[in-house]
Image 1 (tube, rainbow, N blue to C red):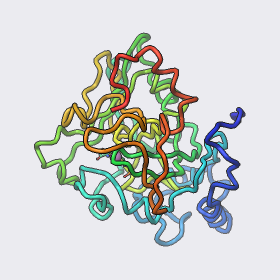
Image 2: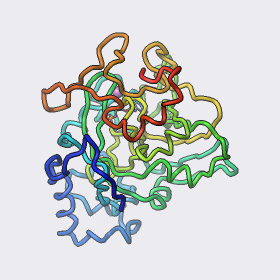
Image 3: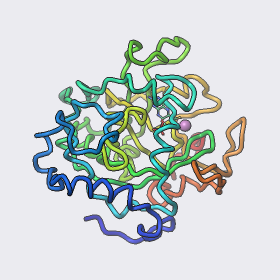
Length: 330
Ligand SMILES: Nc1nc2c(c(=O)[nH]1)N[C@H]1C(S)=C(S)[C@@H](COP(=O)(O)O)O[C@H]1N2
Ligand SMILES: [Mo]
């Protein structure tokens, strides 16, 4: 287990976390005799019986990974604030493929997440294509509590389950010296009508430097609230880079491309003066149309001061020390 000193923004987990979000799920599994199901994870799934009625909403019945949830929580990633309830975060989403409002959870149920092939290509010796269930089975799943700060100045705190992006980089074995990792969302306007809006540069594209992609905080989420990702959160695989504005955390990823050319990202292509490649959170650098000094914490009615790198400076500030000429904070 990862043991390290406590960070400034951490307080003991028991004071911060509504444990019932996690414990109820375990209790549920325990009563069904399924707590040790991790070992036989791939054996049930379609039966879908490990979760309570209603809890399966937003999860594909063909998902073969159900038995891997809930994953062990990594205590190194705790928070200074309560987890935002699922009832709120699952009904307040940003997912332009399904519409530009925040209430697209209904539309997003049209997302078909099985079968789901992932392609890993570009600067690699061998292109990999792998189904999501096989990929997840290979990866070290854990739960982490992360902050999420949207560029629109609202925030939430989410228990993601997933694996470090570095584990996928290790699987892919990019050529040494490769500079960037580009990530793309599916493209299929028949299930995501937003993609008929031709003025957007579909598919949604994001990118990180290799140093960012292999930083311990860069996380690929496959689950949330102790179960597989709901469709509206970007099932079956989405990025979580909590020191950056939320738009960097690309949802429903199908393709990872290692490249030496800096990717032009979705929002950067639309508004280069408002949304840059780096998009690191900084309360002192306003968006051209609003302040970034504070944020509304979803569900609390409170505004709190925004922190540099969203509070994760200790982990990531060093990544940027030689890049001061870049627009790091937009
Ligand atoms: N493919 C895709 N990924 C996306 C977006 C999107 O519209 N499409 N929106 C981004 C923005 S602006 C935010 S704040 C988060 C929202 O994630 P959530 O809806 O799961 O909370 O997803 C990000 N990833
Ligand atoms: Mo966002």
